[in-house]
Length: 327
View 1 (cartoon, rainbow, N blue to C red):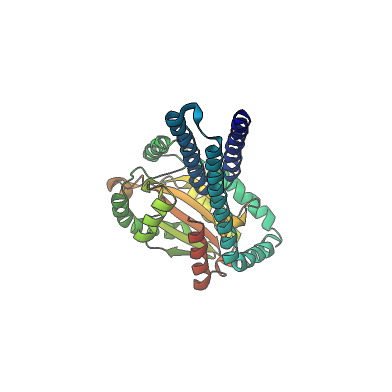
View 2: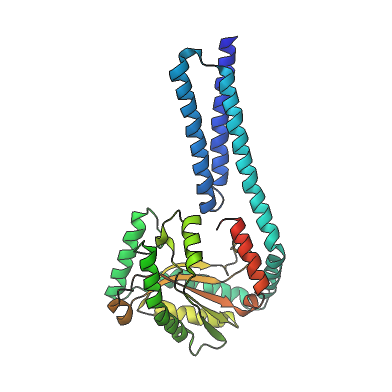
């Protein structure tokens, strides 16, 4: 009977391990920040489980109780089930918060893409986005990009990040760079029909700290939007013209573009909201002299049809959605 009980316990152990692996793999298909958080919890549970088995074997030897093993498995499985339940519930709750706003955005987007000629313009946008990283023309621009590439390699990623990881230094850089960056953005939009640049202050410190620890595990070098600005366009043609200007700027290096106006983009990832978000650096005489040439900034290119839906109440719901998902 003892051998049968031990055999059953071992089978349950194997089943529990497979369950951990399958659930972890399923969560890995979701957003990276969320998946990594829960995968770490799963790994901690597995390590705890095997540590308990090892201690039991050390102190009890071959006389360990199969019943105790089953109890441990049941406890850890229940805890895991609760964690997964809470995660899924947070996704459902977050979706409900922004459901009405997302429906408005999606409705306006459907009207926009069904306008004659829009499909061709969106294809041009996708082609232009692909070409935007080909604008590294000056040696000092290449040098700044090389510094940032080194910073990304240290973190084993290809995504852009700041060269410096000290939050206080980053905020000092942001305060020094922001006026010049807003001036550059105004120049890129100058003369473009229906383009409305909007100067934005640097990111709030409380939000930066929150994002650092909530999303980036305390690594502030991932904060690449402390300095940010936006341009709203009445037409897609104006957006294309401005993006082409930025691409051809010798002093600008485009590091990353998130094209949320792409036809394949899933708007659920941003609560229905759409724009083109660019991570870039400005490498000119002013930024080089002040050692700000490797500070990554964010520029958002927006469509008026989408921006007109935004309001204060909708933004509060967006913040609640973001907090629910711990973004």
